Length: 343
Image (cartoon, rainbow, N blue to C red):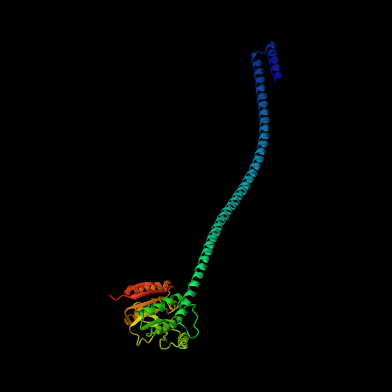
């Protein structure tokens, strides 16, 4: 560019020196200016192209970095998701373990409570068994003493039936024979038969009057009781009547009771209710009073055995709803003595 300017200036001076005038000089200067402008434009274009090439290279580098960063970011996201899944799984496992620990803790507390309850029940059971054993020991002595009293009052001349199972206890039998000695009844009716029938017959024979009629639903047992009575020579004082259970009309509807021949059973002064067995039905002993009420003597006494059992308690409560009864006293054992009110 310096050479162009120098050439143009030298040429313009030479033309003026030769006398060509200023027009040629100006033309030469204009031509030089045009050349300079073109050269400058080319230089600018060349610089611009170089800048474009540098920018393209930088863009390619930037694009490569961006791609690398995108790849790294993608991998990072994948790692984060994997870590998140692992963390969530770990959290779930920890939660599950915590739930199991709580469950085990609850089960442990339940087992401890159960063991405590079992230990307390075992302690109470031991106490109850000790109390029952002491009571049984005392009761056994009491029953033996009562049995000795019976043998002291009477001299049986044949083997006695066993006093066990469903039989009336010796303590109640002692009070029963003493009651018969005091009341001196002429007619005793017994619901159920057995050992008590025999001792009642002995008591009546000692009184010198009276008879007992026992009702029994079991034919074999009734026959066996009659044989024992005959063996003891008491057939004039006692009779066991076989009376199978059959539907019997009562204020509470038909209920199973003895289908007995009640002919001649009027003026009953002592009614002993020791049957039918409770297994024969609900309120098994309830029908005795409503069926025999019109055959009881005024002021008759009723001895109700097993009065502590729920079924018998219910039967007694039902009796009191329809009949005027006074409780005379509790007899020894499980029997209750009642009296039919006359007013």
